[in-house]
Length: 400
Image (tube, rainbow, N blue to C red; front, top):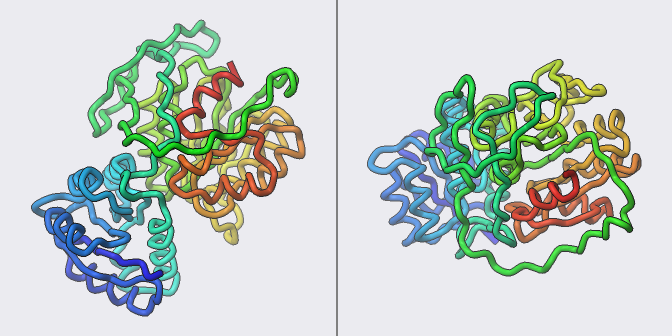
């Protein structure tokens, strides 16, 4: 089936290049253009496109405002274009939370060259977005609403060894993150409410604790791709500051995006979240986001950041992080594979399972793209299949 594409951008050059790059693709047809958000809303109602590419900086109505209105009135899969700047990354993260499926950094030089690699990337992204679960109900919604988050403290503990007070519920901050306070974190925000989800088949029940036997963990590692920023945010905001294990996060994302994403998660959650750096020490209650464009590996309780093999498709790679955890935390790792295209994480999960580690996957109904979790589950490597809205509560049951 041909994908009907609406291009929304105020640049005539960009519109022209998009048409030229996609003209020979038999699977994608550009059915229209719009130069601002208001025109886009009218065009969507008239043309009924399957996918929209949306710029965020436009006159009359900007891309983010258009996206929010679109998800209320005529939900359609959106591929967001953004700049490579910190501000561009921040707006893109807002767009993903508002309902965009995926994003591409906007680079006019690459578009002007129109190389085969750029063409392939653009086509693959459009096809991925078209296959997502955005439709009459808006963005893909979790199979169950989130459980009430544990209480969260007003401030972080002064030292790792100090007793940690039970957190208090926090109110939502403004959309744009404020500068980091030196002694206390801003109020955490609960994820934006999703439309009522379509009932989904119940996940396979977990084995009773007695059947599983005693299990102790030293590390939690979570890998994800398309749909991951919203999924990770939803899980982390429900975890308390006294979470007793370190958490490693591997999200497919460009290097210019991981710093603002880590900052965002840090402000919204009770946990301490940072972009991982060479030599960081794993410690309880802290989450480390793998930097984009690099590979994260572990050496006992230390983090190593390396360039890695140029032949690897993903930087960072879930497989690489999982394999490293299997080596240094055998049988002591709880790994999760969340929403995303492809199969990154499957082979790493296989190595983890060989050491006696535990692997969970996100269920199909709550995934934006059911690729990575499906690959792990079909390989028989998933111990539990869990809806996104229940992962945090299940994690607390397992760990605390």
